[in-house]
Length: 371
Image (cartoon, rainbow, N blue to C red; front, side, top):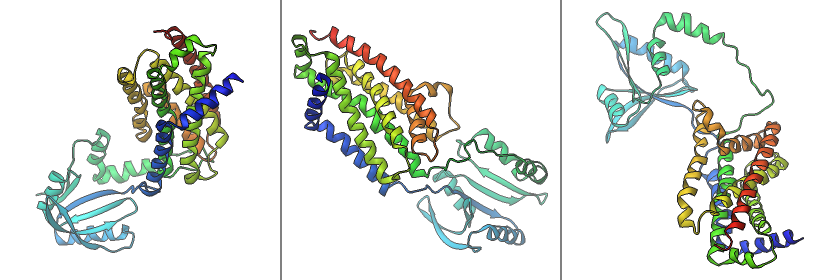
C-alpha cells in the first residue's frame, strides 16, 4: 500500500514536470517524422553514370540492350547538373538501376571528381577490345573491386559467375515472417531510444532535481523506505515509456505488433535502464557532474544502431551491448510471427540484471542520504 501511495504521488508530481511532457512531445515528433518524412520504402536503385566512347554501331547495340531492360522500353533525354554545369544525358531506368548515358568525357569527370559518384568510361582500345574503366571513390569494398575485374570477362561472367549464382540454393530461416517495410524497420530504433535509453537520462534528471530540493535527504529522518521512493520513480518512467511507445506504434502499425510482449519488454528493459540511471546518479551531486558518464553510456548504447542498419558489420562485442538486444527484441515484437521466445528470454535477462543494479543503487542511496 505504501509503495502504491508513493507511486501515485510521484506520478502526479511528474505529470506537473516539464520532463514528462518532453518525453510525450518527443514521441509525437518521432511519429510525425515517420508519417510525413520517412517514405514507406526507400529508393533502392543505384545510379550509374556512363560515357560511351565507341563506334556508332556498338553504341546503338549498347542502347538497344538498355532499352530492352528499361521499364517503359524507351530512353528519356534529360539534362543533368554537375560542377555547376548542365549536361545532356540519356536516362534509362531498370528494375535495379538508374542509368545516365553522358554526352562527353567532361561530364563524366564532373560527376566523378566533383559530385563524387561512381562512373564508367566505355571505350575501344588499339586491339578493338571494349574496355570498361571504373572511376571509384575509395569507399568500395575489395569484394566489389574483385567482382568488377571479372564482370566484363565473357568467359568468367557467363561460364563461371552466372552458372554459379544460378545454382546457389537460398533458404529462408523464417518461412512465415513477413519482411518489414523501410519505415517499419526504423520503429525499433525509435522505441529503443525513446522508450529505454531516454529512461536513463530522464530518471537522472528527476533524481538530481529532487537532490537540489533536498527531498532525498529528507528520507533520512522519515519512516519511508528509500527503495519505495526509487521504485516509484522507476514506475513513473515505465508508465511514460509505455505511453510514448503506444503513441508511435498504434498509428503506424495498428494491431500488427504483439502488444502483450511490448508491455512485458518495456517494463523489464525500462526497469533495467532506469536502475542503471539510478546507480549512476548515486555517485554525483548534480547532472553537470554526471553528464560525462551519462553521455558515454548513451553513446555506447547508440552504437548497435550501426550494426542494425549495416548487417555486414556485426562484431561479437556489439552483441553484448544491451541496446543491441533491445533493437532485436522490438523488431521481433512488431514483426508478423516474430520470435517471441527471444523477447521473453531477453525480458527475463533485463529483469534479473535490472534487479541486481537496483539493489546496488538502493544500497548507494541509503549510504549517501546524509552526505
